[in-house]
Image (cartoon, rainbow, N blue to C red; front, side, top):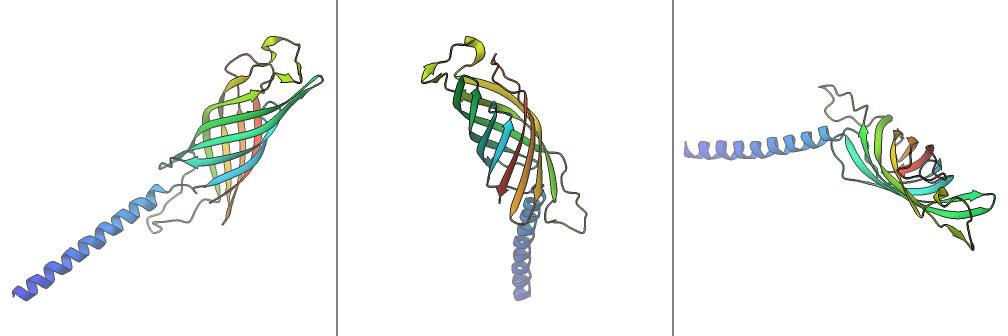
Length: 192
């Protein structure tokens, strides 16, 4: 009888371990409501940089339906008598608008083919006010650093390896600067 009790107790302890492991894995799977990215590169017309830029971005701080994104870009600003390189950066928070539609018989789906996010955050761009000669215009025309608010939508088209990204953003300046654009569109290529 003692032998049966020991075998039964050992069997139930092993089952508890498997049940805990199953619960841990299922909770982890249910928390993944979107396709995570490692990084992306892309181009933006207007938006953060006054006329356009090439940028790189990294993604971090993943949550159940959201993540943070840091972006750094290199662009240009040109007018009839002025040209400068612009450096930009942004920190945004993206919230998933279309999570997986789970069914009880499919505990861990693959991924959405199309994901839509609401994006918001802060950005800034730097423009050098000198181009070998001082720019003689309205001194409020440009500042060294211009802070921007950022709000918009991002769309991800998910492939097996790549993620195609389209961003539509509103970027109002938080300080007076006539060079800053009010909105922009960006396309990017991300990978897992």
